[in-house]
Image (cartoon, rainbow, N blue to C red; front, side, top):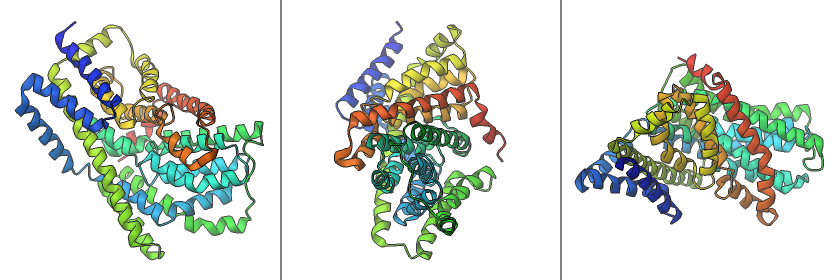
Length: 435
């Protein structure tokens, strides 16, 4: 076996070893990248590369959208606009079979439209919906599994921090990725709702109907619940029409939510400071992973092993559909041990050149890998979303029951992946026709 290929596999093994030790993925990537660079080019070159990568992305205009999108979601939550949206959806849909779970999914989709974080979506919508689900006698395992799955919409429906991360690492258009995520995100939310409706029809005791609301109450709530959809149209409408860039869209959305907080009298300094701190923490985390990941990717380029791997894959005669199907179980397994950023940064330096060579559209692959990362958020033993949801359930939360009820939602997400592979225009039609 070629010595450089051995170095690549050794670096992957070293990386996984560091993560098993509990070292954060960003630092683990930086250590492996520095070690590899030092071995091939020397210590001074390795340090120069690390400083260049960090400086380049910390000052990047594109990267500025990360804290702004996080702030938009934080301000929406602190200002109570997420609560307004949830209350409005509940009045319209809670009387359907499984209506409160359907309400939770639609609310997750709505909140996902103003924040790019999956765990934030689970925590925010779950804290409002789980007491209602519990009050109406919903099965705790089904409820918490549904909230876990619903939270994954946070990184598929734009804006999405996962897509921003992918765009930065692969140098793709953030705007086109956001637009490509719209139809798949809506389709997945619909499939979740349909599944919950079906479960409630088969066994109404698991998911009873919610409280009745008058038509007057339903129409009265519309103005209050409209802030979240307006923010979505500010972000996506402006990007789709070519009016402004994703970073400018993020700034406009943040400013709009902040003005709404002032106008409605909901602004408070404690919430404002908490939002800034939270945005700073998440931004620092993403920047660390980006810097470490790109350093690791540059080390892989130095090994010159990518052309050999690409040549091996193409020599097997494997087409793009077959390769994507092979990736599904690989990402499902990785999702048991890595978070979304870990999955992307460990695999993209190897997988991305192969999919480009096979003719897979990079924008389509961004949606594909985002959905696979969503699956990672609900698979044991790491399944971050399931543990966030379980914390909401308190003593009633039984992880075994949650993971059993996760299975139907897991298969729905796999179904979405298959649909995307067979009909890529579900993701690509909108970006192809955008300004």
